[in-house]
Length: 293
Image (cartoon, rainbow, N blue to C red; front, top):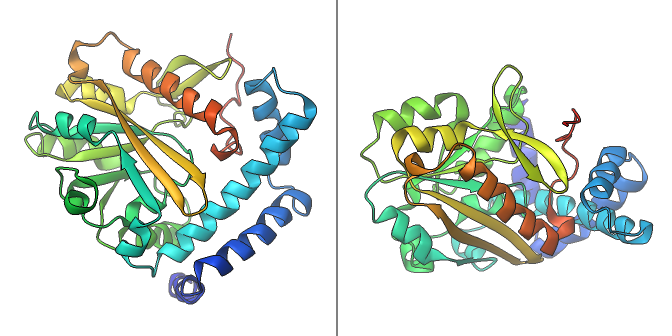
């Protein structure tokens, strides 16, 4: 099954990006108006997060969400066979000085990101030093991921993220041991942090989008124990063919921060970006399954 799926995706990815965007428009319409993909969850999340919006404005954000989600899918498939140079022309990076400052401390760093914009296309970037002025080898950009239940899905996603050799990936289950073993390394670990904690694991409660929200504590906990610098990375999608990653330093040493500070700061920065680009966050996740007092 994996080989069949990969073969079909590889064939599809060779089509021009413009054609992928044409298919994206059809996909967005199909997800909203035919299969109603998580429609109730999407509308509920948006309405609770932006109580000041009118029904018409909420509907506009809903439409933007489906369009962005379809574009993320289309661009990720297209990027499988596109060159890193071609992908690089779709991406700009700002705040390099914050990342370079953190890496100059000669320690590993944790970078906290959310499901904003197109979080997948950044796994196919060209040389970070010559293209973006980032003082870090591509192989030391490490994306931490949660293994999907489907073995086929896990293999396909891993291939999409590692095909270009532009980054490394590591399963979240193994990340703590890896960081301890390579504590003297110079790696930047990307954690997607706007997810619900797994069942049976603890989390951190923050004020986020007008709601008490439970977020994973792993990144903050690891950074505090290891004395690591932590950065926020905002993945902004200004439009088609125009993606931006913006780095901002949260702390040079998480060991000196009060409990919950790092995650709270991440939530505040992510919220700012969501308010500026409402339709580009992943509203289909059931992040508020349990109402918190």
